[in-house]
Image (tube, rainbow over all chains, first blue to last red):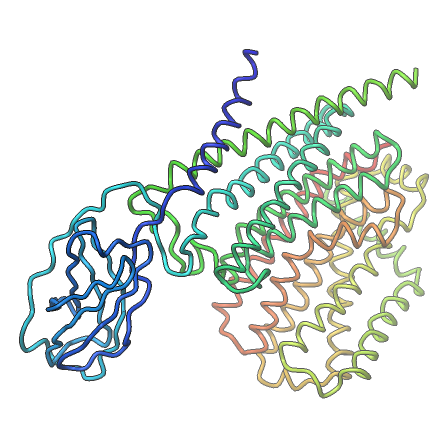
Length: 339
Length: 221
């Protein structure tokens, strides 16, 4: 019982993280605004929110252009997600693009570059106000980003799969080095089982990634540096299994498989490190895309993500532990039946 | 140590050049692949496709040429060789000889290829850079595939297993050389391609070092 604590912990972490990942609401944000061009004079602007509650309290609407703020006059709240603001836009706005800001009692939302400003000047000639005082949003919610929206929850499923896969492959590498140093067949079986379990996680990573790619990038598979890395990884370990399957002498099989595993692991790691520098990737954190840590300024996602990573790694270790023990029993039976 | 390496390299060359048919086979393979492409594709190639097709032909030529590398001698001869010389020297000599073979083969392939599929894409290219990518690419294929060919030969399963084992590990090298070739065809400055050449060279060094490290475990039974 005592040595099982980590299995309970892993299950608890995965369950908690998954439930929190699926149940946490998204932070309110502005999805879109129309029209998209503002001309000087009277404008009626419709703002469409996502997960917003415009009917609670009195939202105020501002425009920001080049550091100058303009406040809307009359505001009609249609429902929680729609409001129309009547704004008198002055002449002489400095920048091409104008941001839309909706300040509520519970936090401030900004739609960047919401409107195009066709006539540029040297600064608003009238009607500017001070910047609205920032208010903190209360309550626990995931960041709400354009393109990602609800799919940001997938971060807690997709990424832990790859982390767990890499962990298991590293365990397999250690087993393979042990095979070459000590020549014990059990280590070879351990390396093969680690590869089997890592492939399970690789396929789960591919499936969750594919669904996410469809939702955000519009294709099940895109030509992306990280995806090439994933494809190479899966191919390498499938080839490893084919190699083990095609040699019948156990000692020779152990050695050949170990050599291929070490060779392929090192090349694969180099590839995964070097490739995003050579080709652009759509993934966050490289190729000019912001990393998730930058998205996640209020750190609401971070604890859930870490819990999911640790939990899934624990599940992976548990699966490997079971399969390793099974392999040991199989090996024992094979060797005793030979005697 | 260095003397042994040079002796082994000479031995490789002598054994290999004795088998003229093998070289003829490799060249004929490239020539047939290029000629078939010429019949099917002439006039339909953009510069990108021209480059990609060249590397695909060269990739398969490399698999074809290097699969023989460790299947030339039978078990007994290999055992004899390893008792005379250190296995690490054997694998280094073989990798070096394979690199020379591939450098020559890729240069000849480029000649055939430009002859039959047109050299238009080369007209705007930085020719020195393109030839350098071709030769470095050939050497890179050789360095990655030497150990793979040894593993496949030991597994007693010829070119089929070699393709399965070799393809995923050679993919990084392939993508790097296709990219450097593409940049050379666009006439990119050396600063840009130089970085890729450096990466390809570093990859070569790592793969040869791994082969040197792992080979002594491979030959024993």
